[in-house]
Each structure stands twice: as structure tokens, then as C-alpha cells.
Length: 349
Image 1 (cartoon, rainbow, N blue to C red):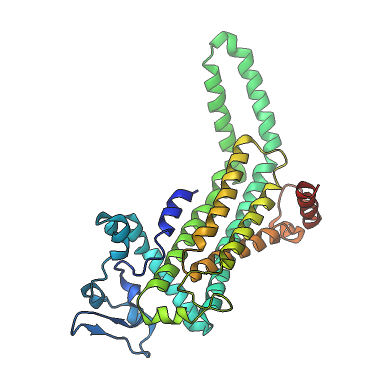
Image 2 (spheres, rainbow, N blue to C red; image 1 turned 180 degrees about the horizontal axis):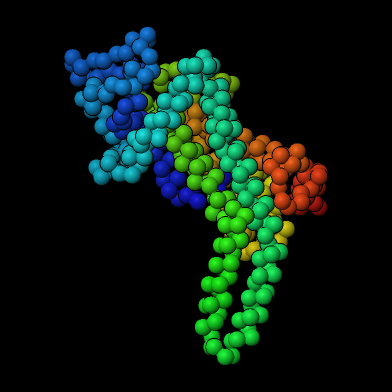
């Protein structure tokens, strides 16, 4: 997942709270009732999702549900803080609409609908971006020899003129090298920043879907009842945390496996890469107790997303995929055997 550890942790510690802050359009998906006399609103089952989502829940505001769950933790200022704004954002409501639509159209139980929605998002959005990232990285790797030759020539030119012009030529060397590199990246259309596109799409999407499931699981509505009965096996209630810790532990294990598989690609990691790797390991372990405090629907989504991410990572190692993508740098013809050998030699030697 391509960073956010502290802020995510503080956000998700609030996820077990029993109510939601006031939300907008798609918060009124189904039956809501007010505690105030005479202020009762109910949507008949025949009313479609679109028409229901277009109505504001005035009853909800009148009933006193106005962000008390957030205010109870962060005080009066927290009710209008960044977390409530994020949970009430348009992207989160769009994800709510998407999840509800998948469940209604498919007719599947909620646990399977969450898995299907995760599969569709991962396959249609993040997998193509991951393939694009692989192409960009391959092009950048193909330029390394040319970049090395340019750097040598430029360094030699600077060293020859250094005594004549003074030490400011070191700055000239850096600026000239940056200009040459930019020209190479533009020529081959492979600027390294494009390789980070996956992060800028995947991370907001992951957060939005997580908050959407949190909102749907803790909202006082008939939909919450459906989620409470929409689980399976040991997580039969998707609105409550997994008391067995099976989902959280599975999530932590699959995330650690992803990190370790990624680390096998680094033959001689730098000090900074080792630091990032250890931080990612720590964050993967930290996700276990966090996943044990949130609704099971969120833990199920996190586990399914990580499992699909690991599967897609293995898929993109296939020589057949490399031929389709026309990667410029040579790759192994037996990547899975090499990966298994590297894993065994690192941990069982």
C-alpha cells in the first residue's frame, strides 16, 4: 500500500462509537425515526435508492443525533473537526451508495457483497494503475545506464573547469544533471512521479470505503439490521468487532507477507529503505488491534483488499503479463520459483 500511521490510528480508535455525526444526502438510505413526538419518517420498501437518497433527514437532526459520538471524544470542537468532515464527505457518501447498490443489485448477503465490491474496485481501478506503475518503473530502470554515462561525462566536465571557475560549479553540475534527467524522462514518458499515481488513488479510496462501511455499520437504520445479520461463520454480526480476533490476525499476517515479499526484491537495501521497511512491518502489526476494535465489515474489507492486493502482486510477476506490458528491462522466466527460493534462503537458512 504506497504513511499515514498516526492519523489513521487516532481516527479508527473512534470507530466503535455507537452513533454517527449528522450526514447528508445518502445518509438517509432507509428507515429513520425521531425521538421527538410527531417527527417520524419511514421509507417504504418499494421506494428506490435514488429517490430515497435525494431526501434530507430532518428527523435525524431533530432527534438529537448531531455528532455526539465525535464530540464525546474530541469535545465540542471535534464535532465540526476534520474527522467528521471526512466521514461526511462526498466521496464517502458515494462509496456508501456504491456498496448499497452492489448489495441490492446482486442480492448477495452483505459479507459477500463487500467481497464483490472490493474485488471490482481492486480489479477495475487499482490493478490497471499497478500495471502502469510497473511499466514506468521498467522504463526508469532501462534509463539507468544512460543516466550513469551522462553523469560521468558531466562530472568530468565540471572537474576540468573547477579550478578555473570556482566551487559554484558543483551547483551547476546538479542543475545540469536535473535538466538532463528531466529531458530523458520526457523523451521516454516515464517520469518517476507517475509511478506514485497508484498511491494517490488507492489510499483515498481505501479510507473512503472504510469510512463508508463504518457509517453503514453504526448508523441507526434498518440497513444496520441487515448488516448485523449479513455475516457468516464466526463474524455473523458485521456491525460489531470480531471478538475472536481471527479477521484481525489474518489481516496482520497477509500484510506482513506482502511486506516480506516486497523486501525480497531489495538485494542491498539502503538505510532509508530499511527504515521504511521496518516502519511498514510495525504498522502491519499495529493494524491487528485496530481491526479488532472496528466493525467486522471494515475488518473484512481490509482483509479482502490486502488478499487481493497480494494476488495482484503475484499476477504482475507473471512472464505472460510482462510480455503483454512490453517491459523494457529483462525479467526472470521463473519468478515464482525464484521468489520461493529467496524466501526459503532468507528465513530458513
